[in-house]
Every structure is written in C-alpha cells, then in structure tokens.
Amino acid sequence: MRPTISARQKRRKKKRLQKQRLFFLLAFIFLTVVLISGVRFLGSFQALQNKADWAKSLRQASQAAGTNYLLYGLVDNGGQVTIEEIFFLNYPAAGTSFHTVFIPGKVLLHRLESENDPGRFLTGEENGEKEVQSFYTPSHFYNEGGAELLIQQISFFLDAPIHHYLEFDYSGIPVLVDARGGIVSRGDVLKGQDYFNYFMQGEKEDEPLEKALHRVSFLGDLLEVLVEKKGKLELYHTINEVAPYFETDLSWKELRDFQVILEPFFNSPGLVVSLPGNWRDFDGELYLEPDFLQLAALSGGLGENFILPRELVTVEILNGSGIAGIASQVGELLEKEGFQIVKIDNADNFEYQRSQVISRLEQVEPAKEVALLIPEAEFFKDPLPDHPAMVTVIVGKNFLP
Image 1: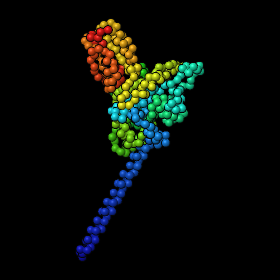
Image 2: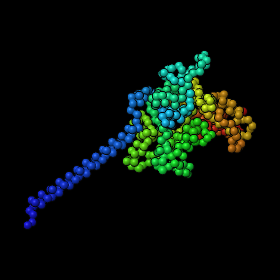
Image 3: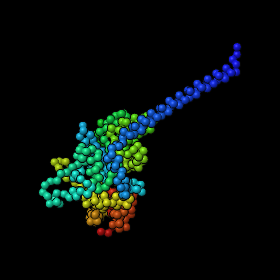
Image 4: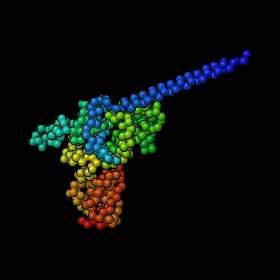
C-alpha cells in the first residue's frame, strides 16, 4: 500500500527537524570551540600583563613630555637576578621615533626616597663628608623589591616618570630556541645554549652599548621567529611559552599597537644616547658613575623638541686633505665647543676638496650642530646603527686652520 500524502509530509517534516537539530548542534559545537579558543587566547596574553596596583598606577603620571617606556633585560641565576642593561625610551606625543637612553646594568646609584631627594645630585665629597656613600646597582634594587622598586628608583634617578615597562628574562632564551630546533645565525643553526652564549657575550672588544645593541638585534631575531604565522593555536601556545620570561603592564591590545612603533628599535635603534658618566674600577670590576649635570640637561630636554646636549654628541674626525695635524686642530675646536671626540684618523684618501659632515643617525640634528662649525662643509646623511660615532667629519682641502 502506497503511503498517503499526509504520511510523506510527516516524513519530510521529520527529516527537516533532524537537519535543523544537526545544524544547531554543529553551530553550538563551533561556538563553544570559538569561545574556548578565545578564552585561552586572551588568557595567554593576560599571563604577560602585570595587573598589580603599582603597575596600573604608572600610566597616571603626566605625559606632557611624551610617553616613557622602560625596557630591561635580566638573567635569573637561581633566584639571584642580574640586570644586564636598561633602555629608557621617550616617545613624544607627536613623534615618529624614540629618544633612547642606554643605562648599563653596572651603573652606580644612590637609594632615593623621592624624586626631589637631594642625594640624587650630591656626592659625599661635595657634602664635605669623608665617609664613602653607599652605592647600589639596578640588580640590588630588583633583588630587594622586584620590578616595582627598580622602576621607582630609575624614575627618581632620571627625574622622569615611567609610564610603561617591558621586562625580558634572558634565562628563557635557551628553552625557546631549543623548542624550535635552533635558530639560524650567521649561516649556522645555533642550539639554545650556543645561541644564548653568543647573545650574552657578543664580541669580546664590544663596549657596553655595543654589546647591549648586539643583544637587542638578537632579541629582535628571536621575537621574529617566535611570532611567525602558524595559526591561533600555535600562537597562544607560543605566548604561554614566553610568559614565564616576559612581563609588562601593557594589555595585549596595547602591546600589539606598541609592537608596531617598537619594531624599528630592534632593527635600527636610531639615536641611542649612553648615560653620561665615567667608568670607575672597583676590585677589578668597572662601574659607571653618572655625571648628574649632563644627566639633568638630558632629562630636561625630553619631549617633542628634544635637543641632545653637545657633551653627549660623539664625533669622529678624519683627515681628507693630507695636511698634517689638521684633524687634531678640528678636534680641539669641536672639543672647546662641547662635543665629545671619540676618534681622530686619516680618511680613505687625501683628495677631498671640500669638508664633509655626515650624520650616522636618522636624526640629523646633532650633525647639523657640528656642521655649523665647519666652514663650507657639505652635509650628508648616511645612517650606520653600529657606528662608534654619531657624526663623521672629513676635513677637506678647503678648510682653513
């Protein structure tokens, strides 16, 4: 007996209901997966962010002279932390690049109670005291009070607010590198410990700033490998890997936006000023004793119209004329005007008809200051991130001593 029309309709309706239930079931499963993935994804990012009250309060300080970031690298040796280097980044409100101050890990600091503490500027000798004042290093502050005390004391020392910070624990580098089977460097695949050793040591003759910039470059390479596009699951797995070795007060959205403006720092740091001061030997270890007068001039110039004090502008002078002693004469002239001469030598030839002033930085203002003192000099811009001087002067035949 053939089914009636009513029976056929019932069967079709039943099939439609089954399809609808299946559709809603699949949709529910899909939505659940998305939600779980989203929670895990956000949870991974939140693991990087310090939400303590003191960290939240940093951004409340005035940003009239721009936003200030503190980036520092450390090595954790079984609970005893060593701060290797610190970078203070001032980003003007209407700026396109950072003003960066390099602070070595071995800098001598006084412990200050407030930003107006007079001990920031006075030494025992200037106070008429005979006793030796107590010195601290960034490592001392971190081991006593973690990131909070370190950031507070660096802020007091620089006389500038710190609005955000990023902490990198270099101890995790071997783990992260080995998890990816090594990283290609200089044509060789380096495993974790080898990569870490070269990361820390650099070239033996490197100065502290050169060594720090070497690490910045390597850190940039490592970060690039870590964030390669491999899907969302791989991304939050990577973030979970990195989380034990990285800390910041920035949210994941802020960190994403900040990464865009920070990228040039890892590739070409631009104008990086070393903390002014003199290196002193203590029991065979060199430590930097800051020059507070130059530091005050540097801190006071932060912001959109930042002008680097002449004492911090490094200049190399090359003899391109063949006239004996001419480079030394120019060096004496520029030294009297306040510039820091780091090298005097011969140029690649003695056939330069006109003197040249070459900026080795993206920011040309320091070189322009030098050019004003070299009559009829040609001005060029040729940025070299690893160059030992900010400005190169080639003395030509047209220079009259």
